[in-house]
Image 1 (cartoon, helix red, strand yellow):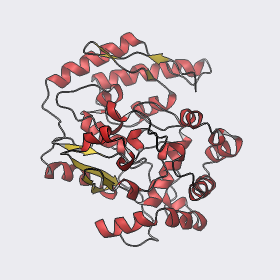
Image 2 (image 1 turned 90 degrees about the vertical axis):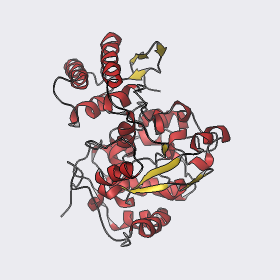
Image 3 (image 1 turned 180 degrees about the vertical axis):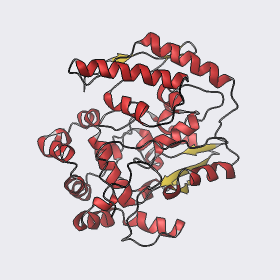
Image 4 (image 1 turned 30 degrees about the vertical axis):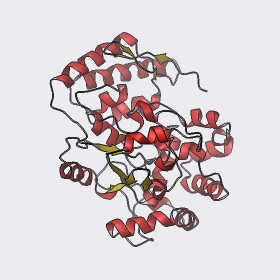
Length: 348
């Protein structure tokens, strides 16, 4: 396990899980343009950025932000949230499939990025996915965090979270999803809000091959095809839950002990998400989607034919589900988000 500095976070007199600030988190906070100047969020960004610059001058890659600064930011955020209208989820429960803009959905439910990062309990905020304390444990079946585990594998007491709820998730094009799954791994990122890294997951799973020289070359050279071909062949060989369940097809998440999942067409975010919320009279809205900022020249258009054949094999059920649900039936079609910066690298 990496020896990251840890800072305790407090909220309303209750001890919170420790938060680890890394260079990846600084990028998440400060690169994505979701803050307005002068807000507590932008001041936190400034503090993190200043700390990052100081650490870089010393030759380090770690960020340190004092617990006093964080407590001040949190108190300001709580005060602001209490004065705002509810952002409640209207009996909605989100099912988080890895690398389908799930962190952006969770941010929307929490009422903003700062609230999601600090796991604040805003006024009637919806704590979806990995922000829900009941989903932060490890599945005995998959070995993955419960928030990345299909609900059909959840313990019965955990599945009670879904009773009398409308269940929804994002359904993403497999080519686009897998290209960006690679970019996520290049950034050594697994869970943006619990601040789990790829390296953490490798250590937890007792398999450090993703930290070895072959994989480091994939990351350095942005070799999306090399990475995906190795990973998908391991999946086909039976290692289905590797990497904290990041490779599981979306179709694995379609059914739950309390009914089917309703799908949002990820191709058309943020509009498709906002329309779904409106249809359920729920207040969360999607701001600028959070996305990977590494290997910006990589997209679905970077995949070669060998990689695409493996994706069609592993995600055959997903292609059928997307066709049946949304009418996107061309299995050869490449897609990327042209409405989001740095998401369509290598598109002709």
